[in-house]
Amino acid sequence: MKIWEKSICLALVFTILVSFTGFTARCENIPNHVLRLHILANSDSNADQALKLKVRDRILQESAGMLDGVKSREDAEKVVSQNLEKIRAIAQQEVYHQGYRYPVKAELTNMYFPTRQYGNVTLPAGMYNALRITIGSGSGHNWWCVIFPALCLPAAEAPSKISDVLDQNETEMVCNEDQYVVKFKVVELYEQFRNWIQDQPIFRNSNEQQSTESVSSAVESSVN
Image (cartoon, rainbow, N blue to C red; front, top):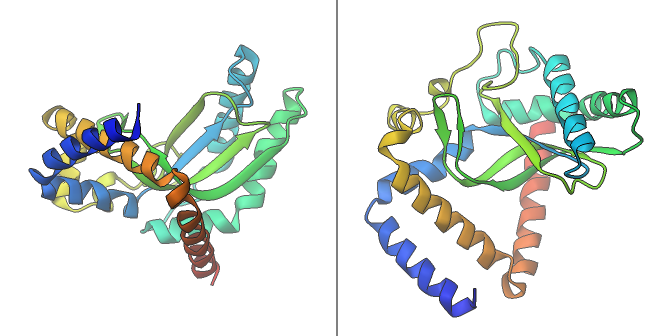
């Protein structure tokens, strides 16, 4: 699609977004309270996809209870940051155990996620902080979930719920996906286009510099 065509699409999406500004604002606030988990397979071969799931299961098993008692995304990131090398080692060990020599990388990053449903909870598309595990080249299909609140991470104590971190309006929105299908889709299209714009050379250098400074600041704050 040409730039002018994308610009027209953006204008249409923006016009629709203006009609439900409050909904968009709630969508944009949700990532401030959520920490995602993202696991990238080495490739799309059956073997590599099966390995990804083995690594997933091992990480979830070994990390059970890791975020017990955590009340905010910032605190969750601090705990994950402190255990990042341990998590990487667990994933790497499982890769070796399954007979592969792929290297494993673990990092905290900020990345785009499309609209995704987890049980009765639907998280809108947007930029979320995430624990990302990359197996080998990371060229295969991925797997994602939410580790704070613990929608996929086992907990030794009663797990936190989405309503523990979102306000009443936000909770009602993410737990009633059927009522907001169209709005979720429009927000997703808008986020995709915004990310495309930011990837253009004219914006990329300044965005990369700002992103680097932001992530560095966040990590320093979490560690301190």
